[in-house]
Length: 269
Image 1 (tube, rainbow, N blue to C red):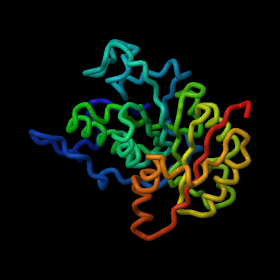
Image 2 (image 1 turned 180 degrees about the vertical axis):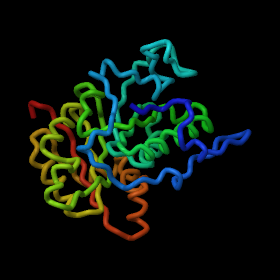
Image 3 (image 1 turned 90 degrees about the vertical axis):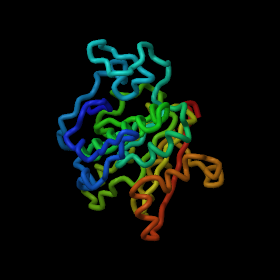
């Protein structure tokens, strides 16, 4: 399981240090195909349960190491009591995470990305931002993992308050639809880790995929769509539209962006 640490990475030559700051990594050294096969064995490590997860390598200012011999330099000796609340599923190059980190500075948020080089890039970017801006960006991190398989291994019931699914792989071919990140089965898992009142954010530039996601979310008994007029006051929405590399590309090409957000209701509702 890949976690943020101070250790050098294979592509660390892409980051230049000066006496005053660490330069951010350059994407050109971390390019990888846009999508990965979620059904393949990616040799991922994962905890038996959320209680077994050691978050100290990802959030050293908030979690004490479970094993003192594996402590990260600067890690606290006592947990802050906070838990991860935001999850960006398939976070790509981390644009949303970095943007939301300063908007919600007291909220821990995690990006999940299956592609090795992309995860390395985001890891190095966060480390550089932390060094260049002491006291900031300690609330954001990334893991290399497959959210379609192991989400409940990392998060407790009703732990999350926001989940983001931004410009996911459309899997155009019908036989590939089972690999889409929004399905009836997966929505039940998302409902398990998302607290009542929590929000799922979806956006795509592919209308067919947008309609697919809306159809499945509308049909699920634990989600209700949030009217567009309510989203105007949501500080996350602007970044959902524009903070990611994909969103910026669509903007440059003057394409359409289809947004749909859903609130997790209580089981009794």
